[in-house]
Length: 393
Ligand SMILES: [Zn+2]
Image (cartoon, rainbow, N blue to C red; front, side, top):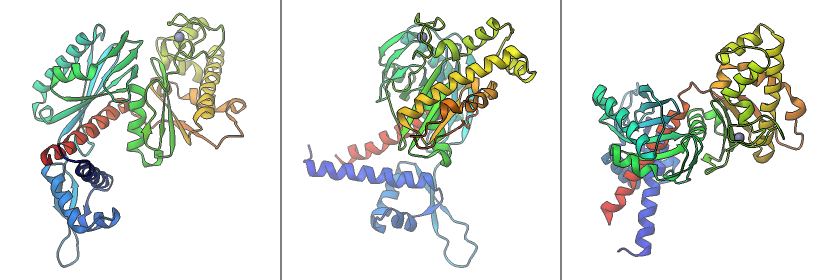
């Protein structure tokens, strides 16, 4: 056992390696000298740290293409094949995978339509089957996958290990990390699906890297996520689906009345369309009826826009984010929902608050898997960096 001082020094070494790695990740093709200067480290320690990172396979050196005469500077960049990470999205009716290399390029996306139900053991088995299928189809990619992030609808513990509660599977206090690790042999971390989505957008788009970012997801169900200074606010924060929106309102699947979900989940939007006299098989039918200026569709969208504005107002007054993103299937299929919500300045205009930008998320439909893959990447990086500690003990 080493003494406290030596432990602290080791921790410092690991933090410094993470710092340098983060810097290389944010600006690939950077010279050792400029890294040392930016991070205020000595050239000697920079050489040692880069040596360690290169031993781990995370970074590689390349010859810069300087056009002038003289010696070309050696530049550092991430090694895209250091390891790959997998983002897994679990939904009621499908499981999908996204594989990303270490330079965040998407290498493969797969989707299996299947009913996802049963015990944690059974669902872990389903995921393992999908993983095995993938391994036999694209072994050259899957063999490099070291870690997986699972994007899951439900409350996930802040350490990414347990599903605390999920209405969708009925699970409580489930150590799904351990279960899936045993089945797949991968390092696993879990995150709530909406939180994974906002993480992806934050890391991917520099213009979204503000102090307080929030995300409202309207899809099969409704959820929100908040980020403060680059960190997700964890736990049950953002579980708004069964917050009462209309006192004494529509009956909800949870048996209460007037929940957000009873108005803004996909199924309930379709039910309200039918009650209003329109027949819609899906949300795009509703969008088309609105565009044709059918009165029932216009009236319904105005009402749904008002409910959405009320949710945005809640998010504004509790956390006053600089930006609130609206995303999810409903927002993609019904672009007029955001327009209708933004018309409600009577609700949104909060003159005591700092101004909030409200806009559509930049998502493509893959954000929840991408976010999970990012988390897996960071998680595995940390594990490997900590192995440096073991090497020294
Ligand atoms: Zn409810």
